[in-house]
Image (cartoon, rainbow, N blue to C red):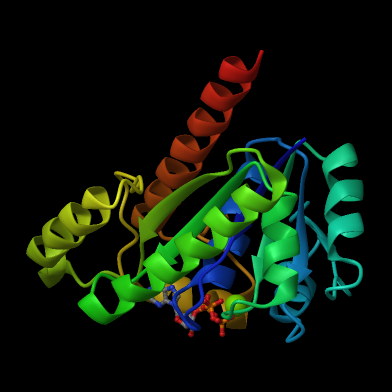
Length: 220
Ligand SMILES: Nc1ncnc2c1ncn2[C@@H]1O[C@H](COP(=O)(O)OP(=O)(O)OP(=O)(O)O)[C@@H](O)[C@H]1O
Ligand SMILES: [Mg+2]
């Protein structure tokens, strides 16, 4: 029903990691969820193979720019929540995915250079809004934060806020638990997962679901 695209014009910010963690967390709460893999590198499919039988996340691959809108629309008709993982660039596929989205999540590290990419990504969302003549909600989430960066994060929040882009209250800290997902397939919400990372992910998911519920209520 609801579609969240996770995108940034910058590579390596943690998009795929977040998509896997959020989708798996929602699934383990009993929700039906699919990931549309819009990145030709196929990292999500590789993770899904490792995640095993007790993971109920469905992965839809082969969503290149010619198919991505249809793949997203079909998944949205079937699952309560659809996450779209995108490549770190401003490609046509990214614009098409944004066009199908209820919410765009923009992960970023907190350094000044990374923030420039937030603004570039937000411009892509704004262009899609103009094209479609409908508002598309976007939210920024700070990722891969070092515990020493809380002051920097305050500055980053102020700068992004000054440009009227909402930032999630929850921050994703840099943890080994996120890096090992690629090897073990187990996300933080797995029963053996890191509880601190699991709380972080549950909190991000909660903020996103609340934003979607508010949007749905406003539209009703
Ligand atoms: N919170 C985190 N803590 C520690 N490592 C992280 C965290 N998030 C992501 N990483 C690591 O950073 C690297 C890049 O993450 P990821 O592949 O999720 O980024 P991406 O934005 O999808 O990259 P790309 O643009 O190439 O698709 C990976 O090695 C991942 O394990
Ligand atoms: Mg990725």
